[in-house]
Image (cartoon, rainbow, N blue to C red):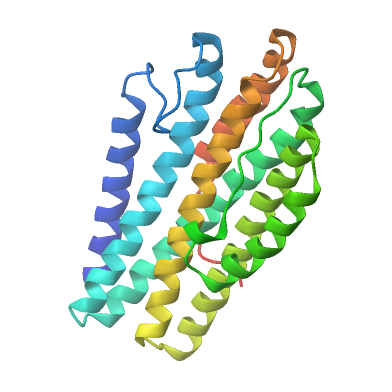
Length: 243
């Protein structure tokens, strides 16, 4: 029964956190060091940013609780918290992928140059991301047109989210089958979440960048897609990692 109570407590904390974040002021972006968006752009950006940030926070809380249970040698409870984390991870991966697909769809409407910031391997910790980004850094040096560089960046983020999710699920399935609680397995969870959280932040930055480059006539279609994405995210229940 303890793990059931723990799961209910986590869900309660997640719901409370979601409400707190959504009650926050709509005046400043959460990405530090960036100038404020105009109100009409912020109205499109803010709900998506909240959805991504809320899911990232809930995922971080559930994984942190799993580590705490592991440290206290309550391994059964630690495993149940990992199961909850797997559901939150799947939900967050779906939101990120849908957002990146929307960016690809609306990039053609950008009438101005879309700046593309490089994503460097030194910011990441997992081997799967470091190896992948080395290839991306090489390709990035060969692309000069801004739209193409932005497309490359979106593809990188989508593939990175897919790779990290695949590795998380592989580790999850291995732990499920073997009940292996070795430090190596827990280190994987830690590194994968660190990099997944970075990918989520880079995805929001890409969304913010594209917003600033779209003409007013293109905002309504994008706004409609974003509303549908948020509504779908609210309706989608958390599930365990796919088998």
